[in-house]
Length: 260
Image (cartoon, rainbow, N blue to C red; front, side, top):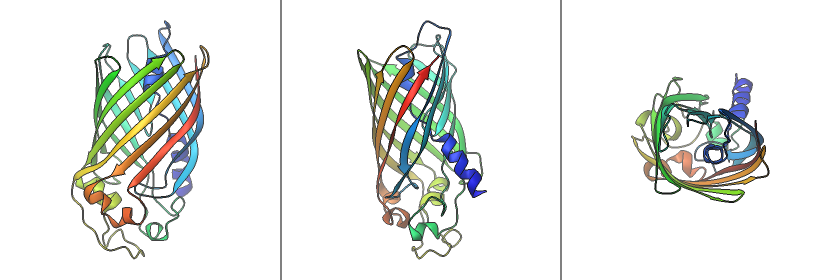
């Protein structure tokens, strides 16, 4: 089972390509984009150590505005044909936490948390020139944490000839079920770890910023790099799980994309 979960993690670690695709579509009815590269992410939420793994990207973009995209650890489908509004279903994936990928002895001694899947909705509104705001909510459907996460993002995208630059800042709010699973320490999940017991309720989880640079090589090929920083907040930051690691979370990667 652990090997299967690791394979799923490798397949699902995606790359945020939303605004790259939106700014480079052609007159074709549908544009498809695929990509592959290398990404890095914390070993678990709250870890100080990172690990590298393959990164993939995929998008199907209709010239009417609708799309299906693998974006980060999730899949989004916009069902609206509108210049300013985007809305649709969303799937989110949460990496497993187990001894196969966690180096910290105290965290790996805790009970394993399996790979999780969440489902929900998202909405994005584009205002002014280059600015957009997005909100999303996903709730666990895999029975792993029985919780949900609401996310809010403000972004700005600028294109200068062949270079597309995207800046965004975000924050998220999580329910008790989610936070208890990933940041709580109980007699049920402590395992053989020596971490102290820790109860946690729902609240704001983090605040972060991301920078994405994409260079358009030609009509078919693009090269993109992304770097994100997230700071864990409040009761989450005070969790023994985080104190064993770090409140600062860094992720990113480099990917080559091909459009057809």
